[in-house]
Image (cartoon, rainbow, N blue to C red):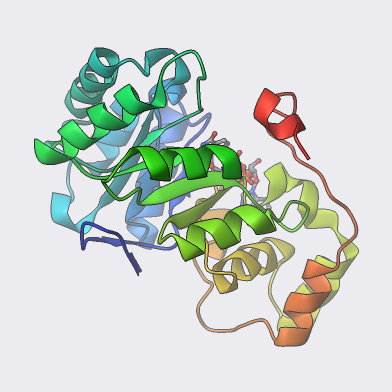
Length: 269
Ligand code: NAP
């Protein structure tokens, strides 16, 4: 667990739910909850609040940590508030633990989106507010605009994409970082360095990728529909990577972003 500005704790391993839909998606989320996952990452854009809501119904709400995100097309003040209301209805819950701006949208003044999130915190509809896909310049801008703490920035991070400036900035300003696509959508799993380290520890390359991110201080939200993978991705505590292993992964020469590569903010630098 890591503590957020609200004082509530976020579990450092959560379940990603992008593309989890229908009965198969429901089964994956329910299996994850059976295994012990208590942190679920969803979004307005994923269109799956209904199955998340069905899966969490039999659990005590305070034991769960639910993140959702408002889409880039809905960042005007009233839209943020109404998306939050419909999200709560669809999930069948009275509050979100974390509500994020899914993608920045320069067409909408950031101030009004952050004001709306702050309003939702004050109304008790969300416990913490945060952002996603905010590069360092937008992160600085957001931190300047709002006096309210920004709890989290959810960004793409895995052994082929470490965003050092962003990670340092977030750490220095008390913003937790969630690594999305922490397996690089499977692309990193064939990597020789990860395979070698995995073999030494008797674990899998997926576990090495997740453990590397955890040891770098990130929260991870891998997605899977396979029970075996869900278990694997949750068994990260009985072993650790040495400083030599960490450095070897840091030194992997491949560098690649897999999600929304053409997004304008990602073209800089
Ligand atoms: P990911 O978690 O990096 O990779 C998911 C893929 O890896 C699936 O094909 C899964 O297949 C496979 N996999 C999972 N565990 C495995 C294991 N132990 N061994 C081998 N293969 C394994 O990709 P992602 O879903 O894009 O990212 C995770 C979550 O981050 C998303 O679901 C979403 O919640 C969030 N996200 C957020 C944003 C954003 O803009 N904020 C963008 C992208 C993603 P199986 O089902 O066969 O296991």
